[in-house]
Image (cartoon, rainbow, N blue to C red):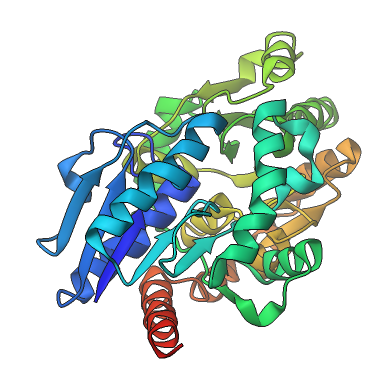
Length: 379
């Protein structure tokens, strides 16, 4: 069996949602199935750390696909030539894309359709491409993978696709995310938050993450509660982040807000694990990996009551309307003053975390790949 994989999001020091999904799933798949040949297709020079075993053959295919025009060239001209040359049994992408010009069976992973519901949050060229071609990809591929029950239903309804064509493969969390000792929590807070307890947000900073709403809510919370709790924002400034930068610069409690750029998993797991609570009030998510990362650390959450987020957080969070700043502020206050409620949320973390496991997800996806290859061979 020969499986070709789009690995263009395996970027050293820059792994985010799709990159982590690719890394965690295919590292396990490669190591657990040495009898299978994997072709890892990169769009630029790769790091050897991503060549997980001898059954991986790396292939670099130009041009680097980081722009809609280059996406089109890479997937529809460059990749088909590689597939024709190497003759894999299946081509799988983890970024929602596919090739419209190959006869090789395909699977794609559509994590969410945020660009359909909040197109204004993306630059024009990106949203135009995604809204034009994602429906075509969804129709073209043999099977669609997604990461939550919410996203499965949303994809089926939005693109008029039978749900039987869509399979759920949950995200997991890196093994580094786990409860911290009191000594480690103290040390982390000393380093990152002036030794104070803190709420934490992790993720790229752009409009869909509702960071502006979180900043406004933090101001209300601080005005109502005489406390030393800080706010940590962990993530790079992404598209349309100018308003977030301005709000940070002019925030009435800016000295108690700490922004840190991209962190590696060792650092981020400590920062999340030492938090008083996660604040994740995004407008739209297909999953919400930081929620699960916090749960794995026994850190409760203040989480939006929309889309997939309640599915991931379960009984470990206080839920808010993400468009209601006062609601977010009130729940931050409740988390602060109601220690009994916070403890009950923490106590629910272990059971909720057990639902999501990378090992199970990797094996489930491998079995789906085998099934699709078998079906294609028999047709």
